[in-house]
Figure 1 (tube, rainbow, N blue to C red):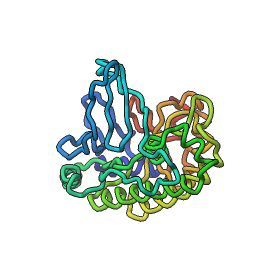
Figure 2: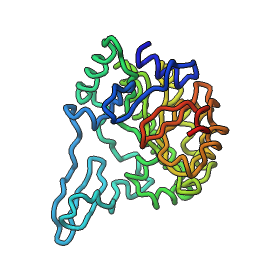
Figure 3: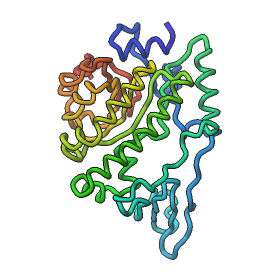
Figure 4: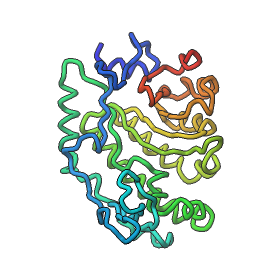
Length: 292
């Protein structure tokens, strides 16, 4: 049984011969995590302005148009977002997304996936979406505080911006399906330490229609759906599972309780459900959570 087959059996509860493995321990892994930043030969859209000294601060403008600042010389500091490209939500339609889905910039990722799939023991290919963070992607170009207000002051404009972002995700999903990926990976932190970032009702109204549409597309194209989400998210995991999320990867399972997670979402997804302990990169069947 190949690594690809083992992972598929693990996440669909079909009795894999062993626990599948993805750890930085020198052993052979079963997963090929195909992320844009891991295939360095592929083109990466450069910052609009690289780190430039502005007196007592350094400043850069990323490819999304967001301005970042940090204390001068603190090169290990990622900085703090200070200005956002969408300053007037009623004019969000004028904002142009970076061209992350340009096929010519995916050459090496496409070749790497094709090479993997022709090996004697192909790995499960998990393709990270170029537009991978729908919630975080929006507040990174609008500002988190502004976005919180937009839910109430400009709901239609916010929904329109999310819809535009979601279409970019669908472009990425179709490309990864064409390349031969087995699953797609997205990232959206929805939790604080002990509660959701916004109410479950807001997530349902503003985001779930697009999650459902995008995840259905991935499934229709023969791929599983994976998502990273941190914080206290147990309230929305059943909703995500029923919407088509196959795998959820969390860094903070302990704050929700492993037994609670197993009870609420272990095997509850129509397509299977899996939790991954990122710090160990060990793929685990939900029925085993109580023993960890």
